[in-house]
Image (tube, rainbow, N blue to C red; front, side, top):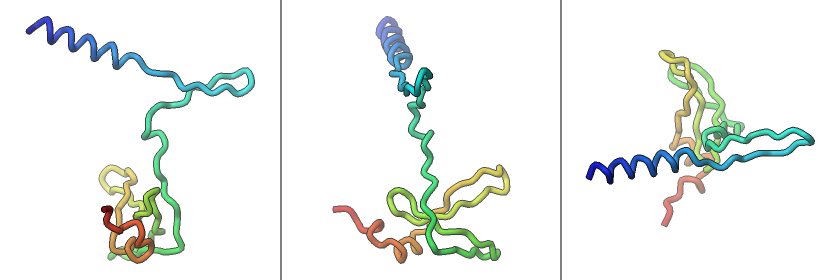
Length: 102
């Protein structure tokens, strides 16, 4: 049993170490391209609509890649930006994105 666990750990560590390199050649320079999916963050597409919260702050309503409506807010505690999705507004702006999939 101990040998089986050690063999499994070794296989997983070998597999984790093998990654394909994505390289782009520009003239005589090779540049490595990141493999991470999170490197390309969905910033959203701005719309003509605005959202006013209960404190009176105005936000531009954005649409994600999938067509869902959201706004960018900043956390007071951490200072990090995050998306706040607005399904009720999104259903009025882009009802096709909110249809149930069959």
